[in-house]
Length: 419
Image (tube, rainbow, N blue to C red; front, top):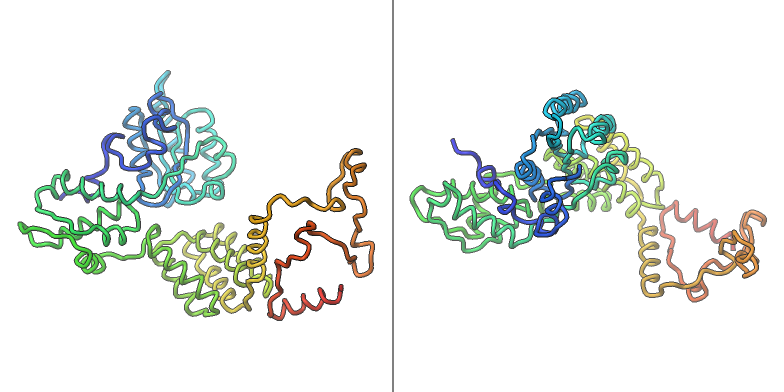
């Protein structure tokens, strides 16, 4: 039985690799490192289906390095130690470092990442990690400081079309079929920019056609066949963004049933739970904010709990938080205030800070009037004293408008009293 099309089309050399010219093109940083024969440990950060695993394998093949892989989904500290021990056994005298590739490295716990530090530091192995999440948030600083980070970009429309065309003309199975493409749009849309998924779509479509007959690929025929054969939700594709959008809008719309429905849809489809939790933190500030400040605390605690326990149990605090956010009173006052202030600053840059608000750590600064006439609010009744805090040009601007939730009304009452 033939291997799947994405596996058959996996590039054998770097010259066959599609996309990411900014790091592997002629004269690019990673390309130059490969040519020198000395590559650092590094992390490939990018969306699904852009060639992270393929690139790691190609680098190992090009440099003739021993290559082993671990998946953060099903590997523990014991597996990491075994991989390090194997790397030590393969390293003799001046032989190059073996390469250890870790897919989805952002899913490793701190303890698992800590176990890599010594081997990376002393050169026992060269680490190549792959992640779809910002490594600044998901990789411990000690490991991150020992690795370069290379950002992989979404494949362009031209890259994806090249991938389809080369598969049709060069693949050992597809090139035997008479295939004509009238439009690429449906395939590209359904793939969500994921090259691996794009090739799966092409193969599914071709396999549904009668043998020995010409194949015409149209948008209508692709949508009809593909939606009958694959789960369209994909963590890197269009439905990923549509579903998280529906989830957030359900919270904003105070609909707990819809919020839980879309949460369940994402969990069932394997969505990264930390991605969902981060979105709930944003919603807690953007859509609830001052109307219920506790929402932000609960959302942040949900992120920490989910990080600690993982699936499947994490679905419970995630559900609790989604329902709480949906049922909370809503206010976008804080969101609008920062947007208003940033918009004003963009059009009125570099306004001088009033002298009485400036820091005065030196004698010269004090002589220049820095900090002079500043009134310390706690020295006055009700811890308030009228004074100007905005630059002169902005002193009449109002960026923050208090909303009409009960919590904000209480805040308004205090604000009015201080006047």
